Structure formats: structure tokens, C-alpha cells
Image (tube, rainbow, N blue to C red; front, side, top):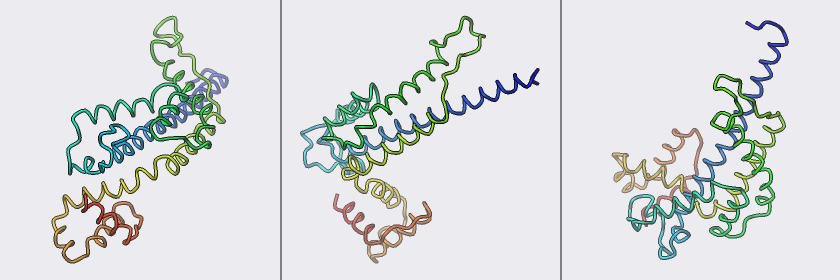
Length: 233
């Protein structure tokens, strides 16, 4: 129970601030998960970007367990990906360009906004840790102020980064990785897979499976090309 309407208004303001903090933290986390996932997939698809001795080796043979990568490859890949998802955004962009080549200008202009999101995210995280400005453990925590515009800006910036990176940085490298991965798992567990291959109905059956899985259709001709590529590995 609140002693006065002023107390209630103060609590409501605090709740809104917590909600906005959550939105900003979620946007920052989404971006880190995306960047780690997509860069890992791209480096798996083109292992020579991590190890020049693997030039012209199809990385999907490693991904789909059809070949064994060098013993130190996974460690080197993880170390490289870590440079994309930690530190200042200026350093992250520099590392991305070293590995993947010149980045689109539409991506690079987002650096100040991305750094601003990271700075706010770090301040919010630190306020709940040992850096929280409290004289005693039971004292109230001083909250980092996050406005509605901060949330809108963060969501817009993260969306623009993902869209541009997907299209012009990672897309042509990753290709049909997701479809390949789904087909691999489906083919491993489908008891009638050999019968489908012999009858030529494999692509149609897989299209049905994807439709049931996601509720979205997928082109049969495209699937057939993916299957032929998979079988050639």
C-alpha cells in the first residue's frame, strides 16, 4: 500500500524505467547473439577465413560431420568470433573488416549509436553489481535513466545493423546454411529417406516437412538444388 499518490507516482515511474532498461538490455543482447551466431556460421562456411591452409575446403563438410577439421580450428574460430562481440564497436568493426573485407557505409555509420547502446547497457548492468553506488547493501539502487526515445533508437539501430549485415556482409557467405542444417537433421532421422531418394520425391517430402515445421512454404526447385549440393559434399 502506498502512503500517498506521490509515492504511487514515484513507484510507477520506477517501474517504467525498469521496463525501458529491460528493452534496451534485450536489444543489446539480441545483437550480440545475432553477431556471434552469424559470424560463426560464416566462418564455418568459409574456414579459410580462419585458417588459410583450408582454402578451397568446403566448411559445410565440417558442419555436417562429413569431415573432421584440424584439431585447433574450433579454438581459432571461437577466438576470432570473440573479437567481433566484445570491446568497443570501433574495434569490432576493424576486426570484421580484416576478416570479411570492407564493410558497407550504411553499417559503419551506425557505430556511434551502437557504442551508445553498449555504454548504456554496461551502466545498467553495473548498477546491480559491485559498482552500484550504495553506502550499504540495503540502500536503494540509483537507476540509470532510460527514456522511450532511447528504446526506440536502440531497436531501430539493432534492426538496421542486422538487416544490412545479413544482406551485404554475411548473406552471400552463409548461403543456404539453415536449410542445409534442417535437411541434414531431417534426413538423419527420416526412416523412409532412401525410398524418397529412389522415387525422386525427396524434395517434395522435405518441402512438406519444412511447411509443417515453420508454417511457411519453400520452393521445390530451390530445395532440390540444396539436396543435390548436400549429397555432393
